[in-house]
Length: 115
Length: 114
Picture 1 (cartoon, chains in turn green, orange):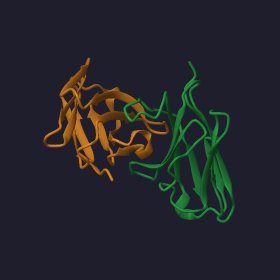
Picture 2 (cartoon, rainbow over the protein chains, first blue to last red):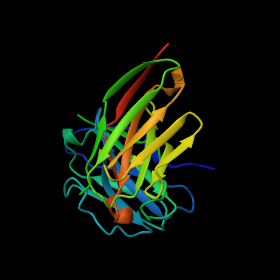
Picture 3 (cartoon, rainbow over the protein chains, first blue to last red):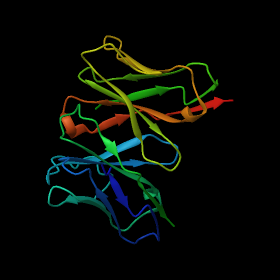
Picture 4 (cartoon, one colour):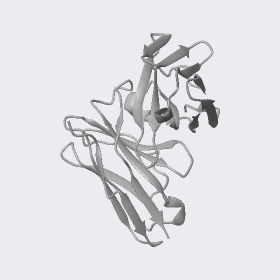
């Protein structure tokens, strides 16, 4: 079946502009996760959704970052007034539920470059 | 919160030899430990995982061991092949279910020398 998809695959933007990143989880998966991977680094957890609800937003790096999920499916991660330090690969994952031991399946990521 | 340390950062082995990557974690309540393989330009792909109720799990050439007392777990790849070259990440999941997401190590770049 179809895996997790993300769009765009690459995004180049100018400092100060807003960007919106999209994630389509595996059909039927109720849990969705966003991570950030900086060059040569591990993955940094940002936020997760169980259904449309994000119980804890404390992992978002700043108040310029926001995320939403509608219809229990597609999620968008929005970065306002982008800064050069926002340049990274943004990865989305989904799992059948947020039980902590459920396998997370990752998408290919969106490579964001802020000039 | 959870902290995961991974070693080594780079590992070069001859084709056919074994490779071992080690991770330690800090939160004794963590109970799920997946390993991911990431190839250049792609997202991480799960290769094996282990839950806290077992000490070892094997899948063909790949095995993972878990020592809960010492809070460390290891990935073992035997009979390495060129296609094993990639970056490998270990991770740990806390007791808070999805609330903590996965905490990842910084990765090991595995290079298989022909």
